[in-house]
Amino acid sequence: MDWKAINDIVGAIDSFVWGPAMLVLLVGTGIYLTFKLNFRTWRNLPYSIKSVIGKDARQKKAGGEGDVSSFNALMTALSATIGTGNIVGVATAMFAGGPGALVWMWLSAAFGITTKYAECMLASKYREVNEKGEMKGGPMFTMKNAFKNKQLGAILGFLFALFTVLASFGIGNMTQANSISTALEKTFAVPVAATGAALVILCMIIILGGIQSISKVAAIVVPVMAVFYVVCGLAGILANASEIPHGLYLIFTMAFNPQAVGGGVLGAITVSVMNAMRYGVARGCFSNEAGLGSAAIVAASAHTDDPVRQGYINSTGTFFDTIVICSITGLVIASSGMLGTVDEKGVALSGLTLTIAAFEKFVGPVGRYIVSIGIVLFAYSTILGWEYQGEKCFEYLFGSAKFNVVYRVIFCLITYIGATQALELVWNLADIFNALMAIPNLISLLVLADIIKEETERYQPILEAEKAGVGVQHATKGEVEELRDMTLAMEEKIEKTQKRVDNLEKKMNKVEATVNKMRK
Image 1 (cartoon, helix red, strand yellow):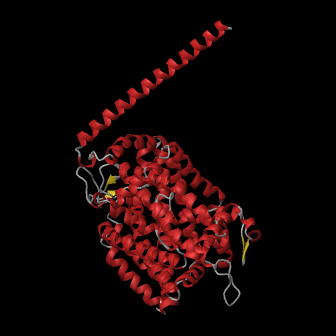
Image 2: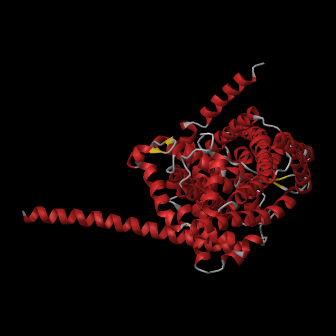
Image 3: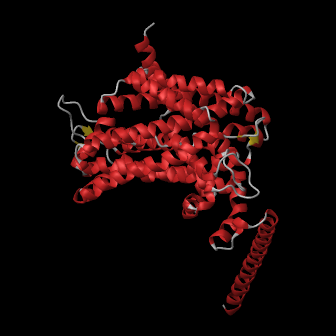
């Protein structure tokens, strides 16, 4: 069997499924929903961020349902989202598409905020409770429960769950374990076998405890690792502040007009707008996972009194992942002058080696350790988050939670294989499954767009009242419904009054036209 030929075929399929058509579908869905919701997710972003950092997100609201707090659910989702893509993926995008790829990452993330909001809100709205009393939800349950065509919903839900389980072992497990073992071996000379064994033990300790255990660890690890990486990155940026203006110039100029900078040639790489757009959007979607539906699975476990509130909270994941963390990596690389350079063997720096070189240029030899520690923390948290997502899809396929422990054990053991073996074929296959997850999920979002808009508009009066300090978050369910009815009635009266005004204006225009004719 010619494994190289098979791998080449799988690689070609991988390039196709993550090609222009998929990127247009991913970003296009985000653009469509953003306009349909009248940019609510953008306009309410400050509210969303405030909801995350406020104490209410860490508490279980009266009248709400769920397994973990809203904050813990977000941190668990972020643990799966923030991974090697924030370090290696950004460098790969900038190597293939130039510094301008970062701008396209930002743009895809801006619309991805709406996509993430929509899928997480729907998951919270259409979730169910299993035989253990635990929440179970995600795009597969949204399709099953919300679609009028139940057969289509069942088929799409099955496909999503199947692709997610398959992807969880690759993208969410082996690739992350391999990144950890490689980083520890190159930086600290730790044998890969030792890393693999340690990962199995550490994963078993946390994962066998279920969502309660995973979310508690994520609530500590995710903020710590994010703050560590951002602070170290900002320290390097501030220490080399004189280099930042040129870095920003390269980022924005080469996103739209790369020919203006050295004819589009930057050292060993040649830049074009299409490459900047393609790789920036692709890496952005791959990093923040907006549209893939994975974060929605965790959002369904959150204790919340309203699905829209949870949707807004989880939408901030895309903001933190791409707009904050990826920006740190991208700005360091663009400003360091290392993009387009080669190593001692004449090979162009890319991926992990490029990020390490950029950080070493900015903060000295300690930069290698910052990047390596960042990869270890990011990748380990990704393993934990993806286990829960894969487990819930596994539960959906079998229709019961009694086999979940089997999935947990197998998932933990496979981390050893990922840490000790280079399985490029498996990784490419997992990458394909990762992309295929998005197709049924995006179809679901487009089909249910009217429900998304209806729910968003329903919640807006409550949101406005909270922003005004009325204290709706402490009101009873009956009081909230009364306020909502009063607001809707008032909006209806305003709309009728506006129609009367419009009709009156039309009549006045006709009278004015008649008077003008009589004068003539």
